[in-house]
Image (spheres, protein in one colour):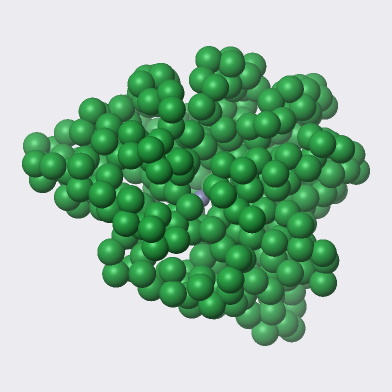
Length: 350
Ligand SMILES: [Zn+2]
C-alpha cells in the first residue's frame, strides 16, 4: 500500500462501490477522493451517498448536485440555494454542475437553460457565502463538434456506445457560445470559486486557458481525462508544463474515475482501455480486473505529473494506435499544490 498523500479531485463513486474505490485509492496513495455524484446527489439519493461515504471517514469529499427537474418552479434558484446549504450542513464540500447545463437541461417552454441564466444566481451567491466551490463542467473539446471518425483526435470516445457524446450537426449551441456563457458567469460571481474540470474544456488550447485564468481569479481547473491532449506533441507538453507552473495555485489533480456497477461487471474501468485484451486482465475475476484497470488509469495520471518518463501504452480510450504519454515532471511546491494542497484548501479537506 502506498502512503496516503494525494487528493483525487474528480471521481464518480456509486454508494455501493465506496469500499472498492478505497482499495484503489490505497494502492495508489490517494488519501481522499472528491466525488461528484451522477446528477442525482440531492434529496434521498444524496443521503444514501453520504451514508456510504461516512463508512470511510476522511476518504471522500462528496459534492451535491442541482435538481433541474424543478427548474420551472417560481423560486427555483432560492430553493436550490437552500438545498445546497442543507447539503453542506450534512457534510458536502461543494456543488457539481454537469455539462447538461447549456446542452440538455430545458425549461418548460422547451428552451435550453443557459449556463449564465440569472435564475441560478442565488445558488452561486450562496456557495460564496458558505465558502464552498462550484465544480462546473461546460462544453467539451472542439473535436466533439467536428465529424467523428479516425481523423478526430477524440474519435475513440465519440463512436460506438458513446456516439451520443458527439455534438456534430445536432443543432446544439456552439462551443464558443457555451464558453462565453461561462465567462459571463465567472465575471458575475467574483466571490464564488469555480472549478472547471478537464482543463476548462480548453485542453487543446493552453493559451486560451492561461488567458481565462488571468481574467478570472476565481477560476480553478482539474486535469482529469485530458492527458492525451496535453502530451500530444512535445511543444504542447512543454507549454502545459509552463502553464501549470505559472498557475500552480489553481490546478488540481483529478482522474474522472468511474466506480459503477457496469464497470465492475465488465471487469474494466470505463475511462480506461478501449479494446478487449489490452488491459492484460485475463483470468482475473471481474472485480479484481476492475480494480487493476482503475489503479492503472490513476497511476498513469500520477506518473504523468511526477515524472518525465514516456508511457508507451497509456491506458486511455482511443480510436487507433497507442498514446505515447510523455510526462510533465513537475516537482517541489508546484507538484505538492497540484497533487493535494490546492484541493485541500478550496474543498476544506483535512
Ligand atoms: Zn466526471
